[in-house]
Length: 179
Image 1 (cartoon, rainbow, N blue to C red):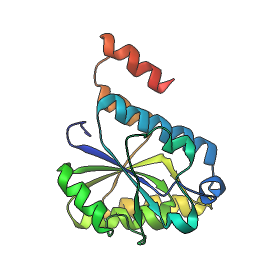
Image 2: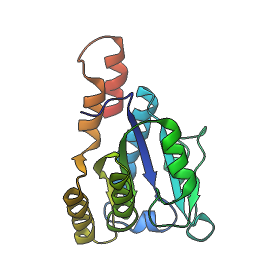
Image 3: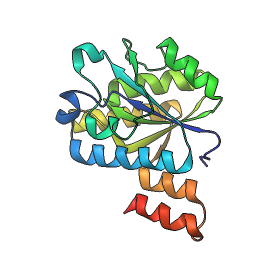
Image 4: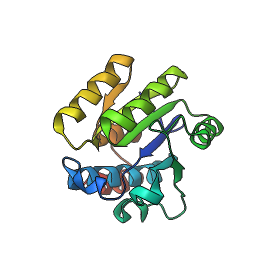
């Protein structure tokens, strides 16, 4: 199971016009926002990357505004892990469970997952927190990552996995995350 002490979320390239063009853009934004709020609630770090932001634009404000104390890392590679600052950040966090969300599933998310797996990270795909411009590309990307050894989850399942207990004062705050 994914635990909060060993987890980090890697948010990949939800930026510019592409973020509006992917399949289910509105739901993608809602799910990733829910995940980011969950990370804050459970004190799980978020590493946030942008592909060529000077050309493709910044992360959508709906998500960037949720991370005022976080700064995106610009990348020029499709794999986020191939960007030295991202790899260095992940190593410094010393967390081996990397939870991926972002766009596009079959390109940047896929290549990132492959690199992470090659470097012995446990990769978990938040499938409702990623998308591509074509549904078949999204599904193929997920299948390809699974073939390499990535695990599948969805935002709600992940948040309940982190919560573990149905009770106490913290549970009411948790419920506001999933509603």
